[in-house]
Image (tube, rainbow, N blue to C red; front, side, top):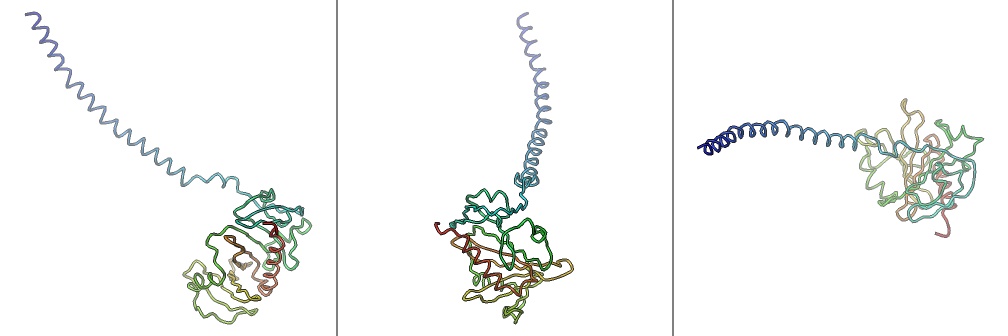
Length: 256
Protein backbone atom coordinates (compact mmCIF):
# COMPACT_ATOMS: atom_id res chain seq x y z
CA UNK A 1 0.00 0.00 0.00
CA UNK A 2 2.82 2.37 0.90
CA UNK A 3 4.51 1.53 -2.38
CA UNK A 4 1.39 2.36 -4.32
CA UNK A 5 0.99 5.63 -2.45
CA UNK A 6 4.64 6.54 -3.09
CA UNK A 7 4.32 5.78 -6.77
CA UNK A 8 1.09 7.72 -6.95
CA UNK A 9 2.75 10.62 -5.18
CA UNK A 10 5.62 10.67 -7.69
CA UNK A 11 3.25 10.55 -10.62
CA UNK A 12 1.20 13.31 -9.07
CA UNK A 13 4.31 15.46 -8.60
CA UNK A 14 5.45 14.81 -12.11
CA UNK A 15 2.03 15.66 -13.40
CA UNK A 16 1.99 18.81 -11.32
CA UNK A 17 5.47 19.90 -12.42
CA UNK A 18 4.98 19.34 -16.18
CA UNK A 19 2.72 22.36 -16.80
CA UNK A 20 5.19 24.59 -15.00
CA UNK A 21 8.06 23.26 -17.09
CA UNK A 22 6.00 23.74 -20.25
CA UNK A 23 5.13 27.28 -19.18
CA UNK A 24 8.82 28.04 -18.61
CA UNK A 25 9.70 26.75 -22.08
CA UNK A 26 6.96 28.87 -23.62
CA UNK A 27 8.04 31.92 -21.62
CA UNK A 28 11.67 31.51 -22.73
CA UNK A 29 10.59 31.07 -26.33
CA UNK A 30 8.45 34.17 -26.14
CA UNK A 31 11.31 36.56 -25.39
CA UNK A 32 14.18 34.60 -26.99
CA UNK A 33 12.94 34.73 -30.58
CA UNK A 34 12.50 38.56 -30.71
CA UNK A 35 15.98 38.97 -29.19
CA UNK A 36 17.54 36.73 -31.84
CA UNK A 37 15.70 38.58 -34.59
CA UNK A 38 16.82 41.91 -33.15
CA UNK A 39 20.49 40.83 -32.95
CA UNK A 40 20.50 39.46 -36.50
CA UNK A 41 18.76 42.58 -37.86
CA UNK A 42 21.16 44.89 -36.01
CA UNK A 43 24.14 42.95 -37.34
CA UNK A 44 22.91 43.10 -40.93
CA UNK A 45 22.18 46.82 -40.56
CA UNK A 46 25.69 47.43 -39.25
CA UNK A 47 27.21 45.53 -42.17
CA UNK A 48 25.05 47.52 -44.58
CA UNK A 49 26.19 50.81 -43.08
CA UNK A 50 29.83 49.75 -43.11
CA UNK A 51 29.66 48.67 -46.73
CA UNK A 52 27.82 51.68 -48.11
CA UNK A 53 28.70 54.56 -45.83
CA UNK A 54 32.25 54.01 -44.61
CA UNK A 55 34.79 55.36 -47.15
CA UNK A 56 36.95 52.87 -48.98
CA UNK A 57 40.55 52.66 -47.71
CA UNK A 58 41.83 54.49 -50.77
CA UNK A 59 39.72 57.54 -49.89
CA UNK A 60 41.77 57.97 -46.71
CA UNK A 61 45.02 58.02 -48.64
CA UNK A 62 43.95 59.88 -51.76
CA UNK A 63 47.05 61.12 -53.50
CA UNK A 64 47.47 64.78 -54.30
CA UNK A 65 49.39 66.22 -57.27
CA UNK A 66 53.09 66.54 -56.51
CA UNK A 67 54.97 67.57 -59.69
CA UNK A 68 58.75 67.77 -59.71
CA UNK A 69 61.38 69.75 -61.60
CA UNK A 70 63.60 66.69 -62.01
CA UNK A 71 63.70 65.31 -65.55
CA UNK A 72 64.83 61.77 -64.72
CA UNK A 73 63.37 59.32 -67.28
CA UNK A 74 60.58 57.11 -65.92
CA UNK A 75 59.58 53.81 -67.56
CA UNK A 76 55.83 53.22 -67.47
CA UNK A 77 53.21 51.11 -69.21
CA UNK A 78 49.48 51.66 -69.76
CA UNK A 79 47.60 48.88 -71.48
CA UNK A 80 49.74 47.64 -74.36
CA UNK A 81 51.82 50.81 -74.61
CA UNK A 82 55.15 51.42 -72.93
CA UNK A 83 56.45 54.91 -72.22
CA UNK A 84 59.65 56.62 -71.22
CA UNK A 85 58.67 60.00 -69.77
CA UNK A 86 60.75 62.67 -68.02
CA UNK A 87 59.65 62.90 -64.39
CA UNK A 88 58.85 66.62 -64.68
CA UNK A 89 55.82 65.76 -66.86
CA UNK A 90 54.40 63.21 -64.39
CA UNK A 91 51.87 64.69 -61.97
CA UNK A 92 51.83 62.11 -59.15
CA UNK A 93 54.78 60.99 -57.07
CA UNK A 94 53.67 57.35 -57.01
CA UNK A 95 53.68 57.17 -60.82
CA UNK A 96 57.31 58.31 -60.89
CA UNK A 97 58.28 54.95 -59.39
CA UNK A 98 57.48 53.51 -62.84
CA UNK A 99 55.78 50.26 -63.75
CA UNK A 100 52.32 49.40 -65.06
CA UNK A 101 49.44 51.81 -64.51
CA UNK A 102 45.74 51.86 -65.35
CA UNK A 103 46.02 55.60 -65.94
CA UNK A 104 48.74 58.20 -66.10
CA UNK A 105 48.35 61.93 -65.45
CA UNK A 106 50.75 64.34 -67.16
CA UNK A 107 51.15 68.11 -67.20
CA UNK A 108 52.64 70.53 -69.72
CA UNK A 109 52.22 74.08 -71.00
CA UNK A 110 51.40 75.80 -74.26
CA UNK A 111 53.11 76.87 -76.49
CA UNK A 112 56.48 75.25 -75.63
CA UNK A 113 55.17 71.96 -74.13
CA UNK A 114 57.77 71.83 -71.39
CA UNK A 115 57.49 69.92 -68.14
CA UNK A 116 56.99 71.28 -64.65
CA UNK A 117 59.45 73.89 -63.40
CA UNK A 118 59.60 74.92 -59.75
CA UNK A 119 60.59 78.45 -60.76
CA UNK A 120 57.23 78.71 -62.54
CA UNK A 121 55.16 76.92 -59.92
CA UNK A 122 52.64 79.77 -59.79
CA UNK A 123 51.98 79.39 -63.52
CA UNK A 124 51.41 75.66 -63.17
CA UNK A 125 49.17 76.14 -60.13
CA UNK A 126 47.12 78.94 -61.69
CA UNK A 127 43.49 78.44 -62.64
CA UNK A 128 43.32 81.69 -64.59
CA UNK A 129 40.98 81.71 -67.57
CA UNK A 130 43.94 82.03 -69.94
CA UNK A 131 46.27 79.61 -68.12
CA UNK A 132 48.71 77.93 -70.54
CA UNK A 133 48.66 74.64 -68.59
CA UNK A 134 47.49 71.49 -70.38
CA UNK A 135 46.46 68.41 -68.43
CA UNK A 136 46.88 65.05 -70.17
CA UNK A 137 45.46 61.69 -69.10
CA UNK A 138 46.49 58.36 -70.63
CA UNK A 139 44.26 55.49 -69.52
CA UNK A 140 43.19 51.95 -70.23
CA UNK A 141 39.95 52.01 -72.23
CA UNK A 142 38.21 48.85 -73.42
CA UNK A 143 35.50 50.72 -75.36
CA UNK A 144 37.92 52.95 -77.25
CA UNK A 145 35.77 54.95 -79.67
CA UNK A 146 37.27 57.03 -82.44
CA UNK A 147 36.36 60.70 -82.44
CA UNK A 148 34.05 60.14 -85.41
CA UNK A 149 32.25 57.33 -83.55
CA UNK A 150 32.03 59.40 -80.36
CA UNK A 151 30.54 62.28 -82.32
CA UNK A 152 27.95 60.22 -84.19
CA UNK A 153 27.03 57.64 -81.55
CA UNK A 154 27.04 59.84 -78.47
CA UNK A 155 27.28 63.59 -78.80
CA UNK A 156 24.96 64.35 -81.71
CA UNK A 157 22.07 62.76 -79.84
CA UNK A 158 22.33 65.44 -77.14
CA UNK A 159 22.67 68.66 -79.17
CA UNK A 160 19.97 71.15 -80.08
CA UNK A 161 20.73 70.92 -83.83
CA UNK A 162 22.64 67.98 -85.30
CA UNK A 163 23.55 70.09 -88.34
CA UNK A 164 25.62 72.47 -86.24
CA UNK A 165 26.59 75.99 -87.29
CA UNK A 166 29.79 77.74 -88.35
CA UNK A 167 31.82 78.43 -85.23
CA UNK A 168 35.03 80.31 -84.50
CA UNK A 169 38.52 79.26 -85.58
CA UNK A 170 37.41 77.08 -88.54
CA UNK A 171 35.30 74.92 -86.25
CA UNK A 172 31.70 73.69 -86.47
CA UNK A 173 29.83 74.49 -83.26
CA UNK A 174 27.01 72.55 -81.60
CA UNK A 175 25.07 73.42 -78.45
CA UNK A 176 24.24 70.72 -75.94
CA UNK A 177 20.67 70.69 -74.66
CA UNK A 178 19.97 71.77 -71.09
CA UNK A 179 18.15 68.51 -70.32
CA UNK A 180 21.30 66.42 -70.83
CA UNK A 181 24.37 65.63 -68.76
CA UNK A 182 26.33 67.97 -71.06
CA UNK A 183 24.29 71.06 -70.22
CA UNK A 184 26.40 74.17 -69.98
CA UNK A 185 28.78 72.90 -72.66
CA UNK A 186 29.37 73.48 -76.37
CA UNK A 187 30.72 70.99 -78.87
CA UNK A 188 33.34 71.99 -81.44
CA UNK A 189 34.40 69.86 -84.40
CA UNK A 190 37.25 70.54 -86.78
CA UNK A 191 39.84 68.84 -88.96
CA UNK A 192 43.55 68.65 -88.28
CA UNK A 193 45.43 67.17 -91.21
CA UNK A 194 43.33 64.07 -92.04
CA UNK A 195 41.99 63.66 -88.50
CA UNK A 196 38.68 64.72 -87.04
CA UNK A 197 39.00 66.72 -83.84
CA UNK A 198 36.06 66.74 -81.40
CA UNK A 199 36.16 68.98 -78.32
CA UNK A 200 33.69 69.67 -75.54
CA UNK A 201 34.02 73.13 -73.99
CA UNK A 202 32.33 74.41 -70.86
CA UNK A 203 30.66 77.79 -71.42
CA UNK A 204 31.78 80.95 -69.67
CA UNK A 205 29.41 81.93 -66.84
CA UNK A 206 29.41 83.64 -63.46
CA UNK A 207 29.72 80.22 -61.86
CA UNK A 208 32.45 79.08 -64.25
CA UNK A 209 34.69 82.07 -65.02
CA UNK A 210 37.61 79.85 -66.09
CA UNK A 211 36.15 77.08 -68.28
CA UNK A 212 38.10 74.36 -70.07
CA UNK A 213 37.89 72.30 -73.25
CA UNK A 214 38.34 68.54 -73.39
CA UNK A 215 39.39 66.29 -76.26
CA UNK A 216 39.19 62.49 -76.04
CA UNK A 217 40.81 60.17 -78.60
CA UNK A 218 42.33 56.69 -78.99
CA UNK A 219 46.08 56.42 -78.49
CA UNK A 220 46.54 52.71 -79.08
CA UNK A 221 44.74 49.39 -78.68
CA UNK A 222 42.66 49.68 -75.50
CA UNK A 223 44.50 52.89 -74.58
CA UNK A 224 42.87 56.33 -74.74
CA UNK A 225 44.25 59.85 -74.47
CA UNK A 226 42.40 62.93 -73.25
CA UNK A 227 43.72 66.41 -72.71
CA UNK A 228 42.22 69.54 -71.22
CA UNK A 229 43.07 73.19 -71.80
CA UNK A 230 41.43 76.54 -71.11
CA UNK A 231 38.63 77.61 -73.44
CA UNK A 232 40.27 81.02 -73.77
CA UNK A 233 42.98 79.18 -75.76
CA UNK A 234 40.52 77.52 -78.15
CA UNK A 235 41.89 79.66 -81.01
CA UNK A 236 45.10 77.62 -80.77
CA UNK A 237 43.34 74.23 -80.87
CA UNK A 238 45.40 73.02 -83.84
CA UNK A 239 48.73 74.00 -82.27
CA UNK A 240 47.70 72.39 -78.99
CA UNK A 241 46.66 69.20 -80.78
CA UNK A 242 49.91 69.00 -82.73
CA UNK A 243 51.93 69.68 -79.60
CA UNK A 244 50.21 66.95 -77.55
CA UNK A 245 50.60 64.46 -80.42
CA UNK A 246 54.32 65.30 -80.69
CA UNK A 247 54.77 64.77 -76.93
CA UNK A 248 53.12 61.35 -77.06
CA UNK A 249 55.25 60.28 -80.02
CA UNK A 250 58.29 61.34 -78.02
CA UNK A 251 57.14 59.47 -74.90
CA UNK A 252 56.06 56.18 -76.46
CA UNK A 253 58.89 53.67 -76.13
CA UNK A 254 60.24 52.40 -79.41
CA UNK A 255 60.99 49.02 -77.83
CA UNK A 256 57.43 48.06 -76.85
